Amino acid sequence: MRFVGTLTKWNDDRGFGFVTPDIGDGELFAHISAFPKGGPRPMIGERVSFEVAADPAGKKKALNIVYLERAAQRSAARPARSPAARSSRSGLIGAILVIAIVIGGYYQYRARSQAAPLQTVAEPSAVAPSSRFSCDGRTHCSQMTSCAEAKYFLSHCPGVEMDGDHDGVPCEQQWCTTPFSE
Image 1 (cartoon, rainbow, N blue to C red):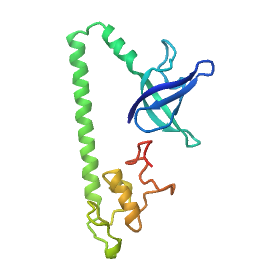
Image 2: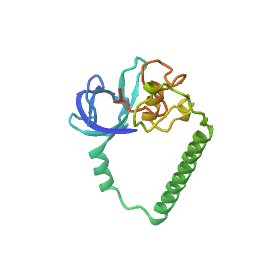
Image 3: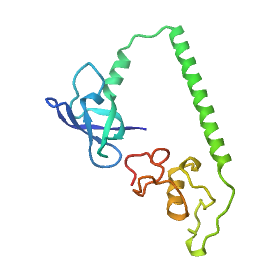
Image 4: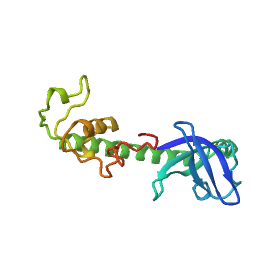
C-alpha cells in the first residue's frame, strides 16, 4: 500500500532522513537506498510517495520512495510514444488486470467455501449488540474478509488463531497491514 508525505529532514552526508506521512503522525526513517537511483539527491520539502515496512527491530521505515513533483515533470517532458508501443502496453496492462481479478475472485471463493457454517453458542452478555459479524467457527486469517472482521473475531470469539505474535493486532500479513493501525 502506498502513502504520500513530505521529506521533512535530510542528512545528505550520512544518506538518510525522515518522511512525515500525510496520514497519521510521527516520522518514518528513509535511507538513501529507498530513493530512485541516479538524478539529483533528495531535498527537504519534496513531496514523495512511499511504502512502509518494519525493520528487524520492529521500527517502521519508508521504502520504494518516488518523487511526486519530479515524476510529473519527467512525464511532461517525455516524447510521445508510437501507437504500436501504446497498444502493446495497454494490452499488457489489460491482461494483468484480468489476471488480478481472476486471482482475487478465486481467493474470495476459497475463503467462503472453507468457512465452516457452524454457529457457536455464546452467552447473551458476550454477544456484541448490533454487530455485523458473528462467531461462526472461523479461526484463521485466511477465512476473514477484512481487518475489522479479524479484530471482532479476536476479541469476541473463542479459539481463534489470528494473533501469532500476541500483540493484539490480528492478521497483520493479510488484513491489518496499515502501519498506522493500532
